Length: 322
Image 1: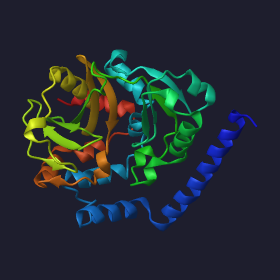
Image 2: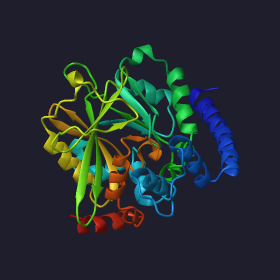
Image 3: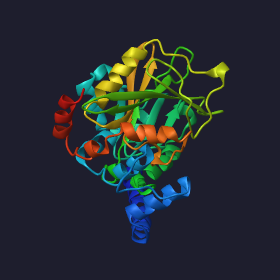
């Protein structure tokens, strides 16, 4: 039996098993019940869904009602590339090497020695390959089949992922002059007809001693800790030389939304798009001190966010915002 005949059957069996498991989990708990259970487990209390105040509560409300074309398309790591090309330009996209519903041997053999491969339909489904000769097709096939068999939405019921058709996305591995992955800047963008706010999240040393810091757009560090410790003074992230260009790209992509996190890379002065995330951490990452959760909740116009269904809605909102 050939690889092409065997592996799709194996993936089909994985998906069938996963669907059975997911069906049982949904029978046990509805999306709302499961989201409330997980929220209470992390925060010690249930969120208010009828009158949400904090950012975490509003993200929880959004994720339960986010299975709409506009959120689905932009949460899809392949489909979002068209949106970015239209709003920012093709030059801000990391070069796409391949995309396919399944990893085939021909696809694998055509890839360069270094690349990044990921699933388009969720988070924590990616692999950085720096030396393809040290990686077998069978190993990568098993890993990517595992990704493709999952419905990422089931983890914490982020419904924008529920109906994304799984695909593999392969992009060029972008490295700086020192051979390192370029800095990643995450812009938390809040917009309304009256005002806008933007905070910058920087994650450092993600593979050893992970630290996370938050900055204003003029690079003043905020006294905020979320999930990971802040960097010590000796390792505080430096202000990027092209900060203004990064901010402008983030604002351009976020306009029309009440809230979205826009992830960007900076490499040799050029800005590259990473992803757009509407429900970071599924709303489960605790703010320390917690008054930031309330402040971000005040910035987040959930009613506006839930008025968006299509790209036409987004375009109309974009024209109305400041």
